[in-house]
Length: 207
Image (cartoon, rainbow, N blue to C red; front, side, top):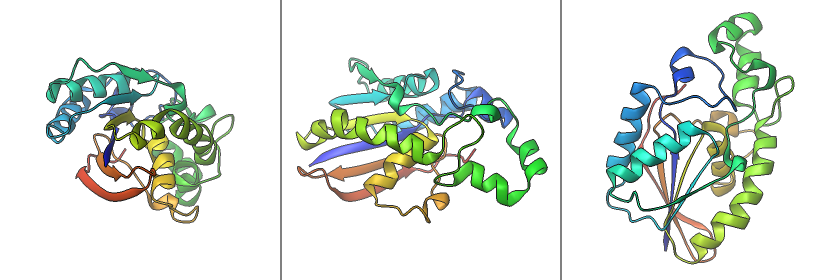
C-alpha cells in the first residue's frame, strides 16, 4: 500500500490580495510560509520516496518547507508544468471580489468553480483535468503502483482536477469541491492504483 499526499501551496502574495494568480509566478506570503510549515508538521510520520511539484515557485516553496519539516530535504522534486494552476486568462491579476461585484454571484461562481466554463483566453477546470490526468497516469501512478509514497505540492485547481479523478466526483458536484491553501490530503493507494482510504490532515484557508 502506498501513500499519495496532496498539498495545496500556502497562501501566496496574490492570494492575500484577493487576486486571480493562475500562471503568474508569485511567492508565498508570510502566512503562506507558516501554512506550508504547518503542513509539514502534519506529515512527519510519512517517508516520501518521490516528490512532484508544478513549475511555479509558490508550490516549490511549499514543498521545500514540508521536506524541511519532515527532515527529507535530500529528496529531489520533479517539476512539471502539467501540474500548474489554472490559467485565468484575461482575469489574471484582477481582484476576485471586484469581479464578483461586476458580474454577480452566479456568474462569479461559474467562473471560479464550474467544470467547463473558461474565462476569456483562459482555461476551464476541464482543460486543467485534460493536462493533469495524463501526467498523473504516465509519471505518478506507476510510482504508486510500485508501492512508493508520493507527495504532490500543487495548486487549488490542478489538485481539484486530480481529486475529481481519484474520488470519481461528478461534473455536477465538482463546484462544491475546494482545496484550501495549506490543505493536506492523504490517500492510501493499492497496487492497482485504486484509492482505499482518504484522510484529511489539514483543511487550510479558502481563497
